[in-house]
Length: 300
Ligand code: PSU
Ligand code: MN
Image (cartoon, rainbow, N blue to C red; front, side):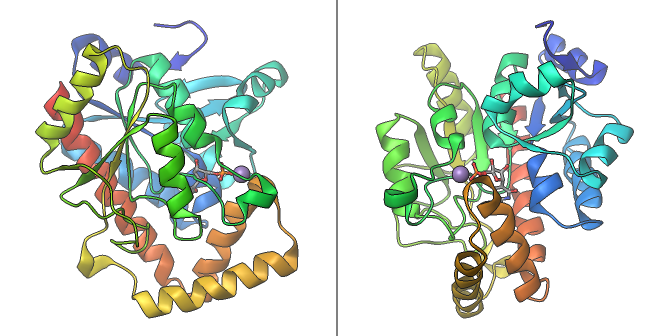
C-alpha cells in the first residue's frame, strides 16, 4: 500500500483479498448536504454497502493525510466541523499544513485510484458551469477523470450546470460514458435531460466488463456510469425549473464565484424547495451507492 495514504484496516484487508470495495466522497457530506442530515446520510451510504457485503471506503483528508475509510470520529468531523472543500490541487497544501479537508469527486477519485479502489459512488459529477465561456468555471472533476482509472457512478450532472458542454468535455478528454439502462443523460434531480449518450449498459456485470476492458487496454481514464434516479423518486419537473431559475438569480445577486458556486446553489435549492430537493438528492445518492456495490461485486 502507498505510504502517503492512510488506509482503514477493513479496507486494506478487503483490497488484499480482492473483495469488493466502494469509495465514497466527503464533500457531499461537508458541503453538499445540510446538518444534521449529512451525518446520517454518510452512515446510510456506508450501511447500504455493508448490507450488500461490500466494504465502504469514505475518503477525506484527516490532519493532512489522505484517508481511505473513516472511523466514526472522522466521519463526524467531516459532517460537523467547518472544513475546507479540497480538490486535487489542495491535497499537497493540506498535507504540508497538516489540516483536514473534505474531498471532491476529483480528489476522492485520485486518492481512491492510488489506493487501488476501482469503483466510486457519488451524487452528481462536477462539470462545466453555465457561462463558463466567460468565467472559465469547469470543475476539476472532469480533467482529473481524464487521467484517473476509476469507475464513477453518478446521477449525471446537476441541471444547474451546462450539461451539453460537460458532455463535450468528457468526449474531448476521452472519458468513457455509459448510461445504466438508458441512453438519455440524467440531470441529477431529474432522470432525463435534453442530451443523449452513445452507450447503454443493462447490468452491473456489463459495466464490470467495460472496466476490465479499460484496464486491459491500458486506459488510464475513468468510466462515468450515468445512473438516473428512478422516475417515481424524481423531482417534479415544473417545480424543479421554477426553483432553479430562482437559484440562478440569487447566485447572481449574491455575486458568488468559483468553488463557492456549487455549495451555494445546492443550499439555496434545498431551502427554496422546502426540503424536497434534499430528499431527491439523498435518494439519487443511495441509488448510486447501491449500483456501485453491484458493480464492485461483479468485478471482484
Ligand atoms: N454535486 C452534488 N453535491 C456535491 C457536489 C457535486 O450534487 O456536493 C460536490 C462534489 O464533491 C463535486 C464538487 O466534486 O461539488 C464539484 O465542485 P466544483 O464545481 O467546485 O469543482
Ligand atoms: Mn469551479
